[in-house]
Length: 172
Image (tube, rainbow, N blue to C red; front, side, top):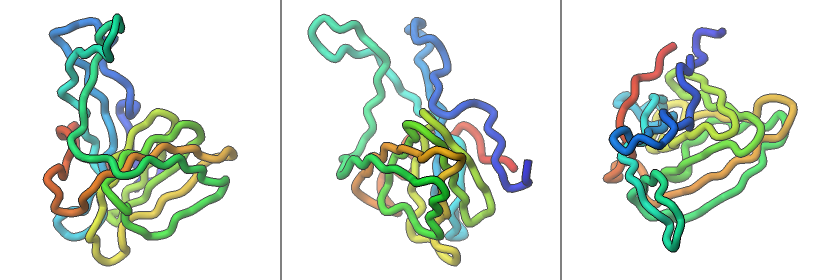
C-alpha cells in the first residue's frame, strides 16, 4: 500500500451494534475533510453519535435517529464516469457525500488519499484553503460511481465545523 493511502480500520458508515441495546446507542464512523491550521485540506476519522430511539409515526416501531443541525440547501445525485478526475478544487459547500454504487477517491493537500465505496460516508468542508486549493477526487474501478450529496449553508467559520465527535486522527 502506498505511504499516502489511509488505512481504514473500520468500514465507514457501518453501525457499531445491532441496535437492540437501548443503553448502547449505535455510532457510525465517517471521514471528515477540513482545512487545517496551515490552510491545507486534510482528513480525519469522525463518529456520528447522539442517536436516540424515535418512531416515524403511526404504528412504526422506534429506530435509532440522529438529526443533523443545519439547513440542507441542495440534494444532488451525481454519476462519476469511469476515469473521471476532479483536479484541485474546494468543497463547494459543507456537504455529506456517500457512494450508492461504484467507488471513488479523495486526495488532500497534506498528501492523504482515501478510497470509498457504497455506503461509506464522507463530510466535506475544505473551504478557504491555500496553495493547492482544496482536494482532488476521482472515480475508481471499471464502473461509474453513483453518489448522493447533501449540501448545507455556510462555509469556513460556520458554527458546526465538526458535525460530530473525533474517532481518531488519520494515519498513514
